[in-house]
Length: 355
Image (cartoon, rainbow, N blue to C red; front, side):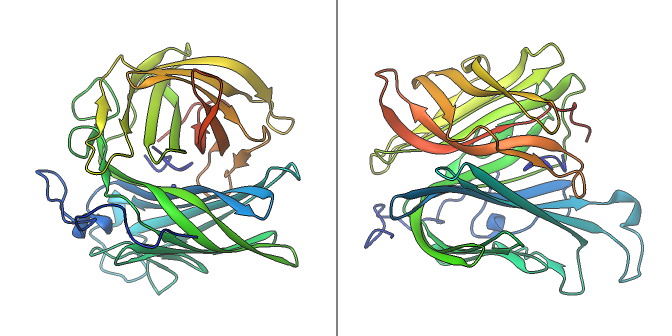
């Protein structure tokens, strides 16, 4: 999931892939690849979202890099090259688990003039000195800030995971409230993480989401909670809920895919996912209170999701206008053992989302 937080303008490899078929060979009634890896400027909102866990020796890090595109309806008829027909936003963040540090940065520009660009034929997104590009079965992610640098290669090891009904993911009680949505879990990562004067060789596992939509949040929705988890056995778990102002679930969903070659995704239906807050953390900066530990019940199992480090709040009010929590987290199975790593995202706790 994601909007202009990741979602608010509404994230050493194996020798060979584990899967016998081309990773982007599937064609569905809704989505067609590789074309749908690219941009959809005719729709209102879109984002490419990459998150992951990195290791450098014994040091553990989390990272997030997200690009957003927002169509501006009022300018579509203008002929000037300076007309802001598409706005581009980007967020990046790094978590140092042992050092208990969290850094984030953001970018904003109108599309055009080689400052902000997207491609409609494949994933090729650029915003100033940040970029995410796809070629064959690998992505390249680049981001530089005053505090950190990311230069990462992310290699596919599994086919696309189509969320919802063959890539149409419902986000509310109205049938028109859906996004086109696919994920790429279990990306194998290698590259360099820069922290100050340090340049650390890293490797790890990442998750990519790509969503685009014309619909906005239901009027009763104030935010959502979402997890995308790479399981240690090679499986993938997604779960989310949209909340109303009383904190009750307005809509929910998700998916589970096992590590078995050719396994089909189990798509969760409305009412099958439940989030129960276990522990909260209050931001000293915004005073927002976030559940940084949850019990999550799904048809695939009951899990405990726990933040790897509590202080992973992002303040993006200078670009997208949102304050939200998004960070590296651990997934604990019903047997109490660590079974996966991924990202937890929570929006609407500092203020209700306004799209």
